[in-house]
Length: 450
Image (tube, rainbow, N blue to C red; front, side):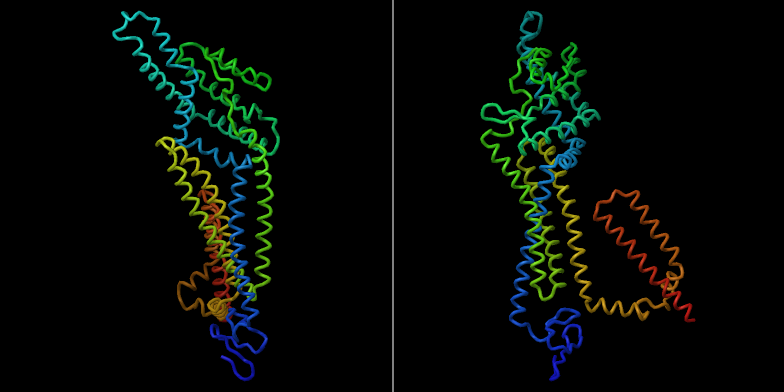
Protein backbone atom coordinates (compact mmCIF):
# COMPACT_ATOMS: atom_id res chain seq x y z
CA UNK A 1 0.00 0.00 0.00
CA UNK A 2 1.41 3.43 -0.96
CA UNK A 3 0.45 7.07 -0.39
CA UNK A 4 0.95 10.29 -2.31
CA UNK A 5 4.33 10.96 -0.66
CA UNK A 6 5.84 7.83 -2.16
CA UNK A 7 5.75 5.95 1.13
CA UNK A 8 4.93 2.29 0.71
CA UNK A 9 4.36 -0.47 3.25
CA UNK A 10 5.52 -4.03 2.54
CA UNK A 11 2.53 -6.36 2.35
CA UNK A 12 4.53 -9.18 3.87
CA UNK A 13 6.50 -7.74 6.78
CA UNK A 14 4.94 -4.29 7.16
CA UNK A 15 8.19 -2.34 6.73
CA UNK A 16 7.63 1.22 5.46
CA UNK A 17 9.93 2.34 2.67
CA UNK A 18 10.21 6.03 1.77
CA UNK A 19 12.76 5.88 -1.04
CA UNK A 20 10.81 5.70 -4.34
CA UNK A 21 13.82 4.15 -6.14
CA UNK A 22 13.65 1.02 -3.97
CA UNK A 23 11.56 -1.63 -5.77
CA UNK A 24 11.94 -4.47 -3.27
CA UNK A 25 11.59 -4.61 0.48
CA UNK A 26 15.11 -4.57 2.00
CA UNK A 27 13.92 -6.87 4.79
CA UNK A 28 12.12 -9.71 2.99
CA UNK A 29 12.59 -9.03 -0.75
CA UNK A 30 8.89 -8.61 -1.54
CA UNK A 31 8.16 -6.29 -4.53
CA UNK A 32 6.91 -2.88 -3.25
CA UNK A 33 5.79 -0.99 -6.35
CA UNK A 34 5.42 -3.70 -8.95
CA UNK A 35 8.30 -5.25 -10.83
CA UNK A 36 9.83 -3.20 -13.68
CA UNK A 37 10.24 -5.01 -17.01
CA UNK A 38 14.03 -4.78 -16.81
CA UNK A 39 14.07 -6.25 -13.33
CA UNK A 40 11.73 -9.03 -14.44
CA UNK A 41 14.10 -9.91 -17.31
CA UNK A 42 17.08 -9.96 -14.94
CA UNK A 43 15.18 -12.19 -12.50
CA UNK A 44 14.27 -14.67 -15.23
CA UNK A 45 17.81 -14.74 -16.60
CA UNK A 46 19.14 -15.25 -13.08
CA UNK A 47 16.74 -18.18 -12.66
CA UNK A 48 18.02 -19.71 -15.90
CA UNK A 49 21.62 -19.40 -14.76
CA UNK A 50 20.72 -20.89 -11.38
CA UNK A 51 19.39 -23.95 -13.20
CA UNK A 52 22.50 -24.15 -15.40
CA UNK A 53 24.73 -23.78 -12.34
CA UNK A 54 22.98 -26.62 -10.52
CA UNK A 55 23.14 -28.83 -13.61
CA UNK A 56 26.84 -28.08 -14.10
CA UNK A 57 27.54 -28.69 -10.40
CA UNK A 58 25.85 -32.10 -10.43
CA UNK A 59 27.74 -33.19 -13.56
CA UNK A 60 31.00 -31.91 -12.06
CA UNK A 61 30.47 -33.78 -8.79
CA UNK A 62 29.68 -37.07 -10.53
CA UNK A 63 32.56 -36.61 -12.98
CA UNK A 64 35.05 -35.72 -10.25
CA UNK A 65 34.00 -38.75 -8.22
CA UNK A 66 34.21 -41.10 -11.20
CA UNK A 67 37.62 -39.71 -12.16
CA UNK A 68 38.89 -40.07 -8.60
CA UNK A 69 37.73 -43.68 -8.28
CA UNK A 70 38.66 -44.77 -11.79
CA UNK A 71 41.97 -42.94 -12.33
CA UNK A 72 43.42 -42.45 -8.85
CA UNK A 73 45.06 -45.65 -7.60
CA UNK A 74 44.95 -44.78 -3.90
CA UNK A 75 41.27 -43.84 -4.10
CA UNK A 76 40.47 -46.95 -6.16
CA UNK A 77 42.19 -49.28 -3.68
CA UNK A 78 40.57 -47.53 -0.69
CA UNK A 79 37.15 -47.96 -2.32
CA UNK A 80 37.38 -51.49 -3.73
CA UNK A 81 39.92 -53.01 -1.32
CA UNK A 82 37.58 -53.54 1.66
CA UNK A 83 35.43 -55.84 -0.50
CA UNK A 84 37.84 -58.68 0.31
CA UNK A 85 36.45 -58.71 3.86
CA UNK A 86 32.95 -59.53 2.60
CA UNK A 87 32.14 -63.27 2.87
CA UNK A 88 30.33 -63.28 -0.49
CA UNK A 89 33.41 -61.87 -2.23
CA UNK A 90 35.64 -64.40 -0.49
CA UNK A 91 33.36 -67.23 -1.62
CA UNK A 92 33.26 -66.01 -5.23
CA UNK A 93 37.05 -65.65 -5.34
CA UNK A 94 37.50 -69.10 -3.83
CA UNK A 95 35.22 -70.69 -6.43
CA UNK A 96 36.91 -68.83 -9.29
CA UNK A 97 40.44 -69.63 -8.13
CA UNK A 98 39.57 -73.28 -7.50
CA UNK A 99 38.07 -73.64 -10.98
CA UNK A 100 41.12 -72.04 -12.59
CA UNK A 101 43.52 -74.29 -10.69
CA UNK A 102 41.51 -77.41 -11.51
CA UNK A 103 41.40 -76.45 -15.18
CA UNK A 104 44.96 -75.21 -15.45
CA UNK A 105 46.47 -78.22 -13.68
CA UNK A 106 44.21 -80.63 -15.61
CA UNK A 107 43.25 -82.44 -12.43
CA UNK A 108 40.49 -84.66 -13.83
CA UNK A 109 42.61 -85.68 -16.83
CA UNK A 110 45.52 -86.58 -14.58
CA UNK A 111 43.26 -88.64 -12.30
CA UNK A 112 41.78 -90.44 -15.30
CA UNK A 113 45.28 -91.12 -16.64
CA UNK A 114 46.38 -92.57 -13.31
CA UNK A 115 43.29 -94.80 -13.10
CA UNK A 116 43.73 -96.06 -16.64
CA UNK A 117 46.85 -97.90 -15.54
CA UNK A 118 44.93 -99.99 -13.02
CA UNK A 119 43.58 -103.43 -13.79
CA UNK A 120 39.80 -103.20 -14.04
CA UNK A 121 39.60 -106.43 -12.08
CA UNK A 122 41.03 -104.69 -9.02
CA UNK A 123 38.06 -102.34 -8.79
CA UNK A 124 34.32 -103.01 -8.42
CA UNK A 125 33.52 -100.61 -11.26
CA UNK A 126 35.24 -99.29 -14.35
CA UNK A 127 38.21 -96.97 -13.51
CA UNK A 128 36.91 -94.44 -16.06
CA UNK A 129 33.78 -93.95 -13.99
CA UNK A 130 35.84 -93.02 -10.91
CA UNK A 131 37.71 -90.11 -12.50
CA UNK A 132 34.90 -87.58 -12.19
CA UNK A 133 33.90 -88.26 -8.54
CA UNK A 134 37.56 -88.35 -7.46
CA UNK A 135 38.18 -85.04 -9.22
CA UNK A 136 35.07 -83.61 -7.55
CA UNK A 137 36.40 -84.75 -4.19
CA UNK A 138 39.73 -83.06 -4.87
CA UNK A 139 37.88 -79.91 -5.94
CA UNK A 140 35.86 -79.93 -2.69
CA UNK A 141 39.02 -80.21 -0.60
CA UNK A 142 40.78 -77.53 -2.66
CA UNK A 143 37.78 -75.23 -2.38
CA UNK A 144 37.71 -75.60 1.41
CA UNK A 145 41.43 -74.94 1.67
CA UNK A 146 41.13 -72.00 -0.71
CA UNK A 147 38.31 -70.48 1.34
CA UNK A 148 40.50 -70.68 4.44
CA UNK A 149 43.40 -69.09 2.59
CA UNK A 150 41.27 -66.30 1.10
CA UNK A 151 40.04 -65.39 4.59
CA UNK A 152 43.61 -65.12 5.92
CA UNK A 153 45.50 -61.90 6.58
CA UNK A 154 48.20 -62.94 4.10
CA UNK A 155 45.77 -63.10 1.18
CA UNK A 156 44.13 -59.86 2.34
CA UNK A 157 47.51 -58.15 2.10
CA UNK A 158 48.08 -59.76 -1.30
CA UNK A 159 44.65 -58.53 -2.47
CA UNK A 160 45.50 -54.91 -1.70
CA UNK A 161 48.91 -55.29 -3.33
CA UNK A 162 47.45 -56.80 -6.50
CA UNK A 163 44.78 -54.09 -6.74
CA UNK A 164 47.33 -51.32 -6.33
CA UNK A 165 49.82 -52.70 -8.83
CA UNK A 166 47.31 -53.75 -11.47
CA UNK A 167 45.47 -50.43 -11.29
CA UNK A 168 48.71 -48.45 -11.43
CA UNK A 169 49.76 -50.43 -14.51
CA UNK A 170 46.44 -49.86 -16.27
CA UNK A 171 46.45 -46.11 -15.56
CA UNK A 172 50.09 -45.77 -16.63
CA UNK A 173 49.14 -47.46 -19.89
CA UNK A 174 46.20 -45.12 -20.43
CA UNK A 175 48.38 -42.10 -19.73
CA UNK A 176 50.88 -43.21 -22.36
CA UNK A 177 53.44 -45.04 -20.20
CA UNK A 178 53.71 -48.58 -21.63
CA UNK A 179 56.52 -49.71 -19.32
CA UNK A 180 54.30 -52.21 -17.52
CA UNK A 181 52.38 -53.39 -20.56
CA UNK A 182 53.14 -55.27 -23.75
CA UNK A 183 51.66 -54.93 -27.21
CA UNK A 184 51.50 -58.20 -29.09
CA UNK A 185 49.88 -58.39 -32.50
CA UNK A 186 46.58 -56.54 -32.38
CA UNK A 187 46.11 -56.48 -28.58
CA UNK A 188 47.52 -54.77 -25.49
CA UNK A 189 48.22 -56.98 -22.47
CA UNK A 190 49.04 -56.34 -18.82
CA UNK A 191 51.09 -59.11 -17.26
CA UNK A 192 49.60 -60.19 -13.92
CA UNK A 193 51.50 -63.47 -13.75
CA UNK A 194 53.62 -62.38 -10.74
CA UNK A 195 50.42 -61.72 -8.77
CA UNK A 196 48.81 -65.03 -9.82
CA UNK A 197 52.06 -66.74 -8.88
CA UNK A 198 51.90 -65.17 -5.42
CA UNK A 199 48.34 -66.45 -5.03
CA UNK A 200 49.47 -69.99 -5.95
CA UNK A 201 52.41 -69.69 -3.55
CA UNK A 202 50.01 -68.90 -0.71
CA UNK A 203 48.32 -72.27 -1.44
CA UNK A 204 51.52 -74.35 -1.54
CA UNK A 205 50.66 -76.48 1.54
CA UNK A 206 47.17 -77.26 0.23
CA UNK A 207 48.42 -78.08 -3.29
CA UNK A 208 51.15 -80.33 -1.88
CA UNK A 209 48.60 -82.17 0.26
CA UNK A 210 46.17 -82.68 -2.61
CA UNK A 211 48.77 -83.91 -5.13
CA UNK A 212 50.67 -85.93 -2.53
CA UNK A 213 54.02 -84.38 -3.39
CA UNK A 214 55.87 -81.20 -2.59
CA UNK A 215 54.71 -78.26 -4.66
CA UNK A 216 57.30 -75.50 -4.67
CA UNK A 217 55.92 -72.54 -6.61
CA UNK A 218 58.88 -70.67 -8.14
CA UNK A 219 59.60 -67.07 -7.24
CA UNK A 220 58.78 -64.75 -10.12
CA UNK A 221 60.87 -61.59 -10.39
CA UNK A 222 61.40 -58.93 -13.04
CA UNK A 223 64.47 -60.87 -14.21
CA UNK A 224 62.75 -64.20 -14.85
CA UNK A 225 59.19 -63.11 -15.65
CA UNK A 226 59.61 -64.12 -19.28
CA UNK A 227 60.43 -67.67 -18.20
CA UNK A 228 57.62 -67.77 -15.59
CA UNK A 229 55.21 -69.88 -17.67
CA UNK A 230 57.91 -72.46 -18.34
CA UNK A 231 58.85 -72.62 -14.65
CA UNK A 232 55.22 -73.23 -13.66
CA UNK A 233 54.84 -75.89 -16.36
CA UNK A 234 57.92 -77.66 -15.06
CA UNK A 235 56.68 -77.54 -11.45
CA UNK A 236 53.14 -78.77 -12.15
CA UNK A 237 53.86 -80.94 -15.16
CA UNK A 238 51.27 -79.30 -17.42
CA UNK A 239 51.20 -77.27 -20.61
CA UNK A 240 50.03 -73.72 -20.05
CA UNK A 241 49.00 -71.22 -22.77
CA UNK A 242 51.63 -68.69 -23.76
CA UNK A 243 49.45 -65.80 -22.53
CA UNK A 244 48.80 -67.44 -19.14
CA UNK A 245 48.52 -64.73 -16.47
CA UNK A 246 48.07 -61.90 -18.95
CA UNK A 247 44.93 -59.83 -19.31
CA UNK A 248 43.90 -58.27 -22.59
CA UNK A 249 42.87 -54.69 -21.80
CA UNK A 250 42.62 -53.10 -25.24
CA UNK A 251 42.77 -53.89 -28.87
CA UNK A 252 45.90 -52.07 -29.98
CA UNK A 253 44.04 -49.92 -32.50
CA UNK A 254 41.67 -48.74 -29.72
CA UNK A 255 44.45 -47.72 -27.32
CA UNK A 256 45.01 -44.21 -28.79
CA UNK A 257 41.29 -43.48 -28.46
CA UNK A 258 41.28 -44.66 -24.83
CA UNK A 259 44.35 -42.57 -24.00
CA UNK A 260 42.73 -39.54 -25.64
CA UNK A 261 39.56 -40.13 -23.61
CA UNK A 262 41.54 -40.15 -20.34
CA UNK A 263 43.34 -36.94 -21.28
CA UNK A 264 40.03 -35.33 -22.27
CA UNK A 265 38.49 -36.40 -18.95
CA UNK A 266 41.25 -34.67 -17.03
CA UNK A 267 40.66 -31.43 -18.91
CA UNK A 268 36.87 -31.74 -18.81
CA UNK A 269 36.66 -31.96 -15.01
CA UNK A 270 38.64 -28.76 -14.55
CA UNK A 271 36.61 -27.04 -17.27
CA UNK A 272 33.32 -28.08 -15.63
CA UNK A 273 34.48 -26.83 -12.23
CA UNK A 274 35.41 -23.46 -13.73
CA UNK A 275 32.12 -23.31 -15.68
CA UNK A 276 30.12 -23.95 -12.49
CA UNK A 277 31.81 -21.03 -10.75
CA UNK A 278 31.28 -18.73 -13.75
CA UNK A 279 27.59 -19.65 -14.04
CA UNK A 280 27.03 -19.02 -10.32
CA UNK A 281 28.73 -15.61 -10.53
CA UNK A 282 26.66 -14.64 -13.58
CA UNK A 283 23.46 -15.69 -11.79
CA UNK A 284 24.33 -13.51 -8.80
CA UNK A 285 25.35 -10.53 -10.95
CA UNK A 286 22.09 -10.64 -12.92
CA UNK A 287 19.88 -11.20 -9.90
CA UNK A 288 18.09 -8.17 -8.41
CA UNK A 289 17.75 -10.16 -5.14
CA UNK A 290 21.08 -11.85 -4.54
CA UNK A 291 20.29 -13.39 -1.18
CA UNK A 292 17.23 -15.07 -2.66
CA UNK A 293 19.31 -16.30 -5.62
CA UNK A 294 21.95 -17.69 -3.26
CA UNK A 295 19.17 -19.49 -1.41
CA UNK A 296 17.96 -21.11 -4.63
CA UNK A 297 21.49 -22.03 -5.62
CA UNK A 298 21.91 -23.90 -2.34
CA UNK A 299 18.52 -25.58 -2.44
CA UNK A 300 18.83 -26.43 -6.13
CA UNK A 301 22.23 -28.03 -5.56
CA UNK A 302 20.80 -29.99 -2.64
CA UNK A 303 17.92 -31.31 -4.77
CA UNK A 304 20.30 -32.25 -7.59
CA UNK A 305 22.60 -34.15 -5.24
CA UNK A 306 19.67 -36.02 -3.68
CA UNK A 307 18.66 -37.12 -7.20
CA UNK A 308 22.23 -38.30 -7.84
CA UNK A 309 22.15 -40.38 -4.67
CA UNK A 310 18.86 -42.02 -5.67
CA UNK A 311 20.18 -42.76 -9.17
CA UNK A 312 23.31 -44.31 -7.65
CA UNK A 313 21.17 -46.68 -5.59
CA UNK A 314 19.12 -47.63 -8.65
CA UNK A 315 22.25 -48.16 -10.77
CA UNK A 316 23.76 -50.34 -8.03
CA UNK A 317 20.68 -52.59 -8.09
CA UNK A 318 20.62 -52.68 -11.90
CA UNK A 319 24.25 -53.84 -12.10
CA UNK A 320 23.67 -56.65 -9.61
CA UNK A 321 20.51 -57.78 -11.41
CA UNK A 322 22.45 -58.27 -14.65
CA UNK A 323 24.88 -60.72 -13.02
CA UNK A 324 24.00 -64.41 -13.23
CA UNK A 325 24.45 -66.77 -10.31
CA UNK A 326 23.59 -66.14 -6.67
CA UNK A 327 27.23 -66.28 -5.54
CA UNK A 328 28.38 -63.89 -8.25
CA UNK A 329 25.49 -61.51 -7.52
CA UNK A 330 26.43 -61.34 -3.85
CA UNK A 331 30.08 -60.68 -4.68
CA UNK A 332 29.31 -58.02 -7.30
CA UNK A 333 26.78 -56.45 -4.94
CA UNK A 334 29.44 -56.16 -2.24
CA UNK A 335 31.91 -54.48 -4.60
CA UNK A 336 29.41 -52.11 -6.21
CA UNK A 337 28.02 -51.35 -2.76
CA UNK A 338 31.45 -50.13 -1.66
CA UNK A 339 31.90 -48.13 -4.86
CA UNK A 340 28.53 -46.39 -4.70
CA UNK A 341 28.81 -45.90 -0.95
CA UNK A 342 31.87 -43.84 -1.73
CA UNK A 343 29.74 -41.75 -4.11
CA UNK A 344 27.06 -41.36 -1.43
CA UNK A 345 29.68 -40.23 1.08
CA UNK A 346 31.09 -37.79 -1.46
CA UNK A 347 27.68 -36.33 -2.26
CA UNK A 348 26.81 -36.15 1.45
CA UNK A 349 29.57 -33.61 2.01
CA UNK A 350 28.44 -31.60 -0.99
CA UNK A 351 24.82 -31.88 0.16
CA UNK A 352 25.67 -30.53 3.61
CA UNK A 353 27.58 -27.64 2.05
CA UNK A 354 24.65 -26.83 -0.27
CA UNK A 355 22.17 -26.88 2.61
CA UNK A 356 24.43 -24.65 4.71
CA UNK A 357 24.66 -22.14 1.85
CA UNK A 358 20.89 -22.16 1.33
CA UNK A 359 20.02 -21.84 5.01
CA UNK A 360 22.69 -19.17 5.49
CA UNK A 361 21.27 -17.10 2.63
CA UNK A 362 17.77 -17.50 4.02
CA UNK A 363 18.76 -16.36 7.51
CA UNK A 364 20.85 -13.51 6.09
CA UNK A 365 17.63 -12.13 4.61
CA UNK A 366 16.34 -11.72 8.17
CA UNK A 367 12.85 -13.18 7.71
CA UNK A 368 10.13 -11.75 9.97
CA UNK A 369 10.15 -14.69 12.40
CA UNK A 370 13.91 -14.30 12.88
CA UNK A 371 13.58 -10.58 13.58
CA UNK A 372 10.81 -11.26 16.08
CA UNK A 373 12.91 -13.93 17.78
CA UNK A 374 15.93 -11.63 18.03
CA UNK A 375 13.73 -8.86 19.38
CA UNK A 376 12.22 -11.13 22.03
CA UNK A 377 15.66 -12.43 22.97
CA UNK A 378 16.86 -8.85 23.41
CA UNK A 379 13.98 -7.68 25.61
CA UNK A 380 13.90 -10.89 27.66
CA UNK A 381 10.47 -12.16 26.63
CA UNK A 382 11.83 -15.16 24.70
CA UNK A 383 12.63 -17.12 27.87
CA UNK A 384 10.80 -15.59 30.88
CA UNK A 385 12.77 -16.08 34.07
CA UNK A 386 9.54 -16.45 36.01
CA UNK A 387 9.47 -20.04 34.73
CA UNK A 388 11.22 -22.19 37.33
CA UNK A 389 13.06 -24.56 34.96
CA UNK A 390 14.38 -21.66 32.88
CA UNK A 391 15.83 -19.91 35.95
CA UNK A 392 17.32 -23.19 37.24
CA UNK A 393 19.00 -23.86 33.88
CA UNK A 394 20.40 -20.32 33.83
CA UNK A 395 21.76 -20.64 37.37
CA UNK A 396 23.47 -23.96 36.54
CA UNK A 397 24.45 -23.06 32.98
CA UNK A 398 28.22 -23.38 33.55
CA UNK A 399 27.89 -26.94 34.85
CA UNK A 400 25.48 -27.85 32.07
CA UNK A 401 27.90 -26.47 29.47
CA UNK A 402 30.66 -28.70 30.85
CA UNK A 403 28.30 -31.69 30.76
CA UNK A 404 27.27 -30.88 27.17
CA UNK A 405 30.86 -30.66 25.94
CA UNK A 406 31.78 -33.86 27.78
CA UNK A 407 28.88 -35.79 26.27
CA UNK A 408 29.72 -34.47 22.82
CA UNK A 409 33.37 -35.50 23.23
CA UNK A 410 32.35 -39.00 24.38
CA UNK A 411 30.06 -39.43 21.36
CA UNK A 412 32.81 -38.33 18.98
CA UNK A 413 35.35 -40.61 20.69
CA UNK A 414 33.34 -43.83 20.88
CA UNK A 415 30.87 -43.58 18.00
CA UNK A 416 31.92 -44.36 14.42
CA UNK A 417 30.24 -41.35 12.82
CA UNK A 418 30.04 -40.33 9.20
CA UNK A 419 30.59 -36.75 8.12
CA UNK A 420 26.90 -35.86 8.29
CA UNK A 421 26.47 -37.28 11.80
CA UNK A 422 29.67 -35.56 12.91
CA UNK A 423 28.39 -32.20 11.70
CA UNK A 424 25.03 -32.74 13.44
CA UNK A 425 26.75 -33.49 16.76
CA UNK A 426 28.92 -30.38 16.48
CA UNK A 427 25.92 -28.20 15.60
CA UNK A 428 23.91 -29.54 18.54
CA UNK A 429 26.78 -28.97 20.98
CA UNK A 430 27.29 -25.42 19.66
CA UNK A 431 23.56 -24.64 19.84
CA UNK A 432 23.33 -25.96 23.41
CA UNK A 433 26.39 -23.92 24.42
CA UNK A 434 24.99 -20.69 22.98
CA UNK A 435 21.56 -21.27 24.55
CA UNK A 436 23.09 -21.92 27.98
CA UNK A 437 25.28 -18.84 27.63
CA UNK A 438 22.22 -16.72 26.85
CA UNK A 439 20.28 -18.06 29.85
CA UNK A 440 23.26 -17.58 32.18
CA UNK A 441 23.60 -13.95 31.12
CA UNK A 442 19.86 -13.43 31.58
CA UNK A 443 20.00 -14.77 35.12
CA UNK A 444 23.12 -12.72 35.93
CA UNK A 445 21.54 -9.57 34.52
CA UNK A 446 18.36 -10.17 36.48
CA UNK A 447 20.32 -10.63 39.73
CA UNK A 448 22.28 -7.42 39.09
CA UNK A 449 19.13 -5.43 38.55
CA UNK A 450 17.57 -6.85 41.70
